[in-house]
Length: 194
Image (cartoon, rainbow, N blue to C red):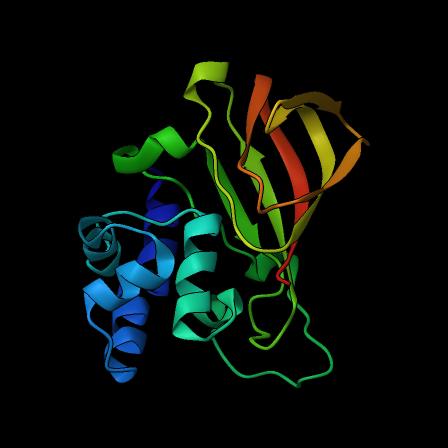
């Protein structure tokens, strides 16, 4: 993992944020496990910053803890009506070698605003074989617009190849996954939590 990505992850300290919220709500790891469907060992690894959770896992955790996913990415308060994230202020959450099986890196685009119904991201999906796709599901709907490259989208029995300029919209409660084809594919992804 690149040093600048490691620094960004350390600055976010997602695990400590999850643990502080859980403790503040007087919840045990077992309680959080029951609400999210995630195992206690997995939650413990997340809280100790041993693994970085994918978006779908962070969505489940944030819902169980009663906050939006944006809570974990805010750095300072902004006006509630307008949120500006400058290009130079964006940062990525890279999947480290300990969870490289996830196969993507994402950049939150509206992280300063906590109370929102949509979560926009730029997602970079690495090339991988169909057997290596990791499937996720979460409440809500999802929109994807391919910015560059070629990606393959899997949702239930549906498999769709998308190229630059293509888009799709789907119910994200159905297990779904992506993979880059012929290199890294980059897409704008907007998640709406119902």
